[in-house]
Image 1 (cartoon, rainbow, N blue to C red):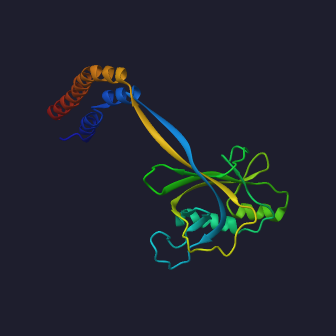
Image 2 (image 1 turned 120 degrees about the horizontal axis):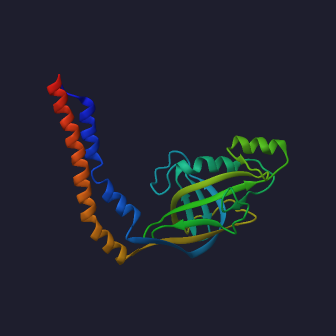
Image 3 (image 1 turned 60 degrees about the vertical axis):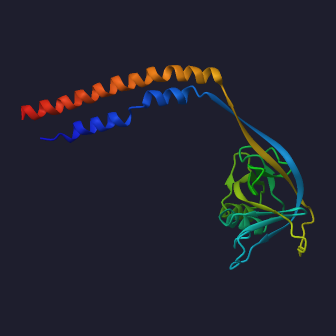
Amino acid sequence: MFNKTRLSLILGASLILPSCTLMLWERDKPYSTYYSTQVVAEDQIHSFAVVKSGHQQAELPAGSLIMMSGQHWFVLEPQDSQDLIKILSAKLNKAFDLTYSCSSDTRLQALPVTLHDAKSNQFTSDFCLSYQTSKAQEKATLKNLGFKLEKDGRYTYEVAAKGRYYATPQAFKADYKFETRVPVKISLSTRTTKLDGDTLAENLFLTPLTLATDLIILPLGAVGALGGLIIDGISK
């Protein structure tokens, strides 16, 4: 009679066959990755706008929040815009502080916009909105907007937005501009991978031996399980 438990052992053994080799290359990676960020432009946001529903232009999806500056339009994706539109429309007595992260009260000097490819107009923007108040009404508003109360009394909201940027249309004139403009810093993040020849050579030298270990240990286990099946079949 067929033993499903023993068959499962055989299949499990075959699935983990390359485990030792995989662990070797994961543990001793023959390369190192470095990240660097370089500021490529600075600007000032003077207006916010929202793309009306029913808009058909691909570059400006309906529901997108646009951050307008002198030289650029930063168009956030609709799904990232929804909550930010509610926050920016909230009636609060003062402006939000921008911080590096919600766990820190270190303020940013400019809104961060990060490009990850010099040939693409896609960007990401990661920062924290921070607000401190003693007014019950403002506290309730912030809570309804999804802000989190920190131990130091700050209300914080983590922003991780994506979008695309474009040159400001020459014919466009904003109906309203902020009294105090918001600085924006545009950075290019690059990744460099450096090959470690010594580690690569060592891994290549050890790989055949590791594979041999895989092939010896696991098939023996599989034979043992198969032998059990035969014995079970004879004994029944």
